[in-house]
Length: 301
Length: 276
Image 1 (cartoon, rainbow over the protein chains, first blue to last red):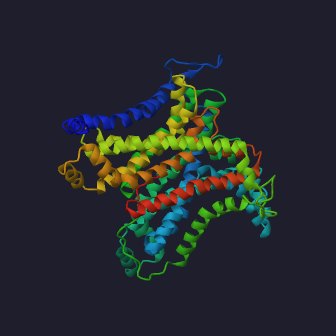
Image 2: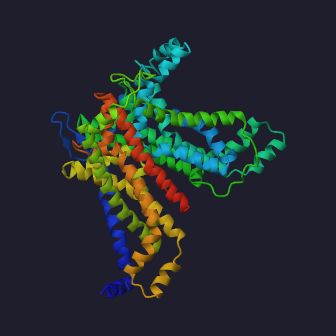
Image 3: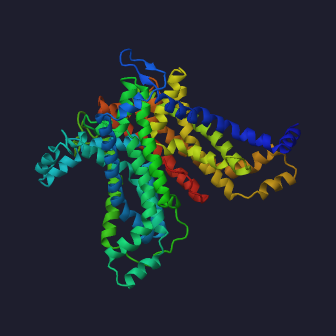
C-alpha cells in the first residue's frame, strides 16, 4: 500500500512540490504579505476626529498629517538618533572586529565569536533591563562618578536639555547608550567578516611602502572593510528606527517613530496614522538597502 | 559567517590600541549581563543601589512561587513550543521545496521568509495588528503563536537548507535503488541526516520566540508573556527583587540552549543561524 502511494507521488513530482510548497506559501501570503497589504490599505483610511471611528474610504489626508511639523520632527529625531547610534557602533565595533579577524588564534576567535553572538540571542528585554540598573540614579554610573569625584560633571551634563533629563535613565543619552549596547553585535560580525577578506599582504605592503599605521588604516583597511561597515549599519539603522521599547523606557516625553506608532494605534486607536507612520521606516529602509547594494554591502554578509 | 581560511597569525601581536578597544567592547557587551546576575542577589527592594547593600538568596524561592511570574512563564513556554513546531514544519517544507525543485519565483521564497526578521519588528507587529483587527479576530493565545511562528520559520529554513546543500543526492538514489519507498527513504535516510539541523533550528526558533516582545505587544490581547511582564515591570516597577530574579532566569533559559545549538552546528560545521 505504502509502496503504491510512494510510486504515485514519485511519478508526479509537481504534486509533491505543491504539497511541500503550499503550506509555507499560504501561511506567508495570508499571515504576512496579507498583513503588510492591510497595513498599506489602512494607511489610506482616516480616523474621524468626532466619532473616533476609522473611516474606510480612500484618502491621502492621513499621509498629509505626517507632514505636520510635530510629526516631521519625530522622523528627524529618530533618524538622527539612528545615525548617531550607527556611528558609535562602528567606532566601538572596529577594534574588536579587527582583533578577531587578524590577531586572534582560531580557538580564541571561536570564543570571541560566541562572546559576541551570545548577547544577540539572550533576551532583548533583559538586556534592556540591565541598563535600567546601570543608568538608575542610585546605579553604577552615579556610584562611579561619585567615586572619582565627577558627580558635579554628571549633574551639569544632565542639566542640558538636549542630552540630559532628570537622570541618565530618563534622557536622550540613556536611549543612545542602550541602543548602542543592544545593536553592537550586529555591527561587529559583518565588519569582522569583511576584514577577514582583506589580504594581510596588502597591509604589510602598505607598511613597507612607508605608510604610517594611521595612513594604512585610512587608505587601505577602511576602504576594503567599508562594505562590511555598510552591512552592519543596515542592522543598527533599521533596528533603531523601528524600536519603541527603549524610547518608552528611557525616553523623556519626546516621541520616536516606534513610540509614536504604538501610541497612535493604542491609546488613540488611530490605526491609519500608525500605518502611515510605519511607511516612513519602510521607505527609508528600502532606500537605504538600495544604496547599500550599490556600495557592495551584500557581498559582505 | 565563521571564517574557514584565514591566514593564521604567526605570533604577531596586536597593537595595544586595538587590544584596548577590543577588551573595552567585550566589557561593554558583558558587564551589563553580569550586573543582572549580581542584582538578583541584592537585598535592596526599592531601588537599584550600587553596590548592593548586602546579598541574599531569599528572592529565588519567592520568585519561583510568584503566580504572576509563573503564569507568564507557562504562557511563554506554550507559545514558544507551538510556534517552534509550526516553524519546524513550515521551514522544512519550504527548504525541501526550494532545494529539490526548480520553479518560478524560487528566489523570492527565501527573501519572503526573511522579511519578518529583516523589517523592523514594529512593521511586522503593526501589520499583523491591523490585519487582525480588520477581519475582527479576537486577540488571543493563538494570535501570539501565529505571529511568532511567522518570524521563526526562517531560522529553521536556513539551517535545514544549509544541511540539504551539503548532503549528496546519491544517498537518496541509493536508498531508492535498494528498494526503499519514499516514506522509508525519508524516515531512514533524510530524517537522520537533517536531524541535528532541525534540532539547532528548533532551538534557535524557541529562544527567538521565548524572548520576543515587539511583535507580541501587537498580537497579544490581555495575555502577558514573560518578556511583556518584565517590560511592564520596567514601566512601573512593582516588585523589583522578583523582576531581577526573573531576568536572570530568562537569560539562562535563552542562553543555555543557544550554546547547545552553537555546539551542534559547529560539530556539523555549518553555522547557519541567521541574525535576529
